[in-house]
Amino acid sequence: MTAPEPAAPPRRGRGRPGHDQAAVLRTAVALFNRRGYDATSIGDLAAELGVTKSAIYHHFASKEDLLRLALDDALDELTAVVSAAVSDADGASARDRLREVLRRSVEVLAAHQPAVTLLLRVRGNTPTEVEAVKRRRWLDDQLAGLVRDAAAEGALRDDISPDLVSRLLFGMVNSLVEWYRPEGAHDAATVADAIASIAFDGLVRR
Image (cartoon, rainbow, N blue to C red; front, side, top):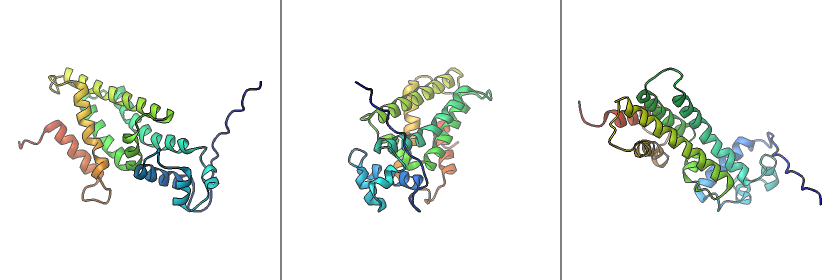
């Protein structure tokens, strides 16, 4: 009995005008967010784009390939931001590094809002989702570690669990997927500064 041949890698190409890989992926993410990943088929995506299913398979091996690339779009930059803060290459305090992670996370979310929205909705129903959930947990653990270090420095109060503080801080950031709009009254930098200021300095007038 011969072993099955490995699956062919996804083909990459420019495709027909207006429907290159990036355009297909953007439309897929929008559909996944609107209808749900499980409820969206390649046929639905093809209909939305006005192309055949084979035109989509020209770029992507499967629906899960689309999901993986979308989640990587959200996770890769967040991972880079957190990894840089944890490495402490510049010798900054844990408090300053945590504050910078908070600000940069807002900027990443604003730049990749559809993909981050999708990331926050995955529940581990596919291998790709399971891997994304693992990566999110790693981010949570690293952030809790920064909170713990900042408390040890005496920069933050130490009577609240670091895990809880981390969840509350980044729950504030994640809430942006529900209301933030790039064309709205406040740009990403303003929102990032406001969240960091509220989180670290509070709302009490000084």
